[in-house]
Length: 228
Image (cartoon, rainbow, N blue to C red; front, side, top):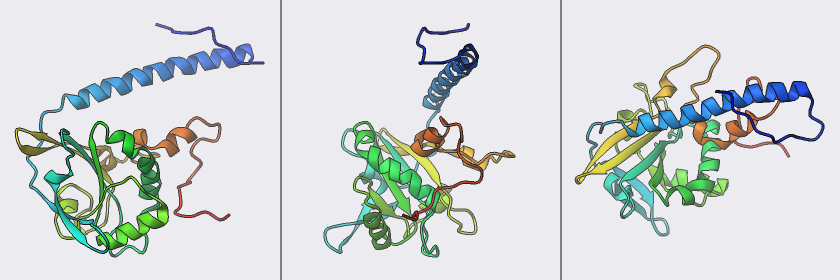
């Protein structure tokens, strides 16, 4: 079924409207598909039970606190989003792509936490992570170090050689136990001519550029810093 509306823009041509209406149908189909995929995701059965990893987190002053995975769930919340940030001790600087994504996530973290719990984990020591976050101006992300546990290896934040990988994992609490619910596995499915795009739906940068005539730009990627 073709769906249209009566809204028009100043000076638009008949050709523009014809092509815009064609695009509109595709956009509506995509919107419906996004909702359908989200419903399929919600229907996933529980994944495997998760061990109660111990992470490091910055405390008051220079203190380093130990925090269990179970403690990352806020009171009365049963869902946790945990993003694996590509920043290992061997890396001189964190991944610029991850950092761009977290720039946006920091701005939305307070809103997300009204519904579910949220944290970011990296393999570097917690002091190094916090210092970079301070330089970046992040204020709302809960940052953790997985330097002392196997979380990264177990939930694909790194490969078998220790190379860091970006992953968004979702965990859920049921009957006093923590289970894995979802991981952004499209990262592992590489198609010719396409980036993995496993978290693009959560990333304002690419969604904004996709609206423009120029698109994402050929071989363009965000950087940690830009010349003034």
